[in-house]
Amino acid sequence: MDKKEVKFEDKIKELEKIVVELENGEVDLDDAIEKYTKAMQLAKECSDKLNAVADKVNKIMLENGKIEEFTVEE
Image 1 (cartoon, rainbow, N blue to C red):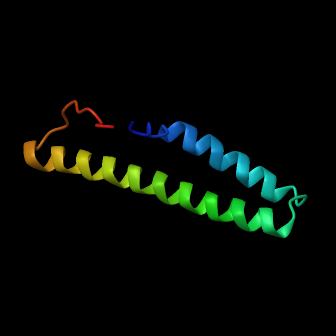
Image 2 (spheres, rainbow, N blue to C red):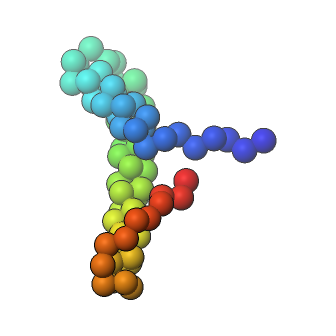
C-alpha cells in the first residue's frame, strides 16, 4: 500500500508549529534537535515543490509565449 503524500499546506502548518515550539524555548535539547531536523526536512520539501511549480510555469510561458492554464501534478 502506497503512503499518501502530505499536502504542501499541511507541511507548512507542521513547519509553523515546530517553529513556535522551538521559539518558546521550553523544548529540551534532544527534542529541539529532532524538531529542528524535521523542520529543515519540511522546509526543503516545500522549497523543492515551489521550485518545481515555478519551473513548470516558466516552461509553459517560454514554450507558448503567453500564460496558459496549467495543472499541478501531485
